[in-house]
Image 1 (tube, rainbow, N blue to C red):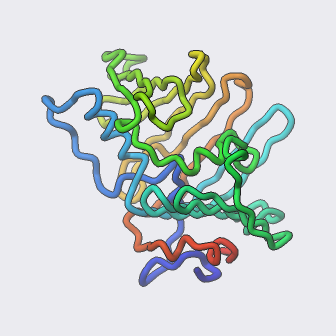
Image 2: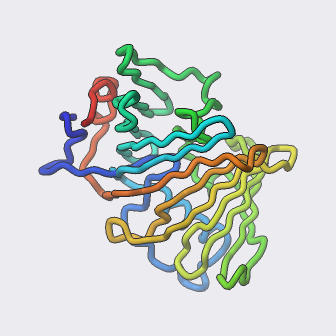
Length: 265
């Protein structure tokens, strides 16, 4: 890590590989053969869209609550599903604040007091930086096809767009927090449209909406993701990609506590 951030071999690159929400497939997504378009095949393909071998990007996160609004500019790096590093660039008073996820552990660095703090398991359900994204979201690495029974709940046209809508229920003993998930996918290009998350009492908890589909790094991605809690529908967290690079040369040493403490300018 230099003052410019993690060095990509031979050059500097900026952008975001933000896991939870955000690491992407390390190649174009090829259409499935007609005979292979089962519910699990389709969802596995869509699931891959939210993952990748490695990525770097820059995003903004706009948080709106009933009491205050705030906007963060973030730079982040990801390697597979086990490693991510997220650093705040603005606002200035929080610049350098960073979160590291490595091997299912989460650490925060607070530059104003020069402290590194491990996030305990009791705090994993807590909000990340005041957003509607949780610390637990940051470390989730499960694949939907591994943890959920998947069936097509609807196939047809919604508002002029051909879609699949899926119904996902947890497999026995699956380490997941959701009672069920509903997921909509655009048929023409396998782009996710929305995901609705429910608790075990069948009450909707939150909705993630995907929009502004565009080519970034030569790949079609949803450049905007909006998280909305069901109990406070006037509140949102909006995540916007501004720069995105794929297949960058990162290794596990880049995701160390030492690098967590280094400010990227």
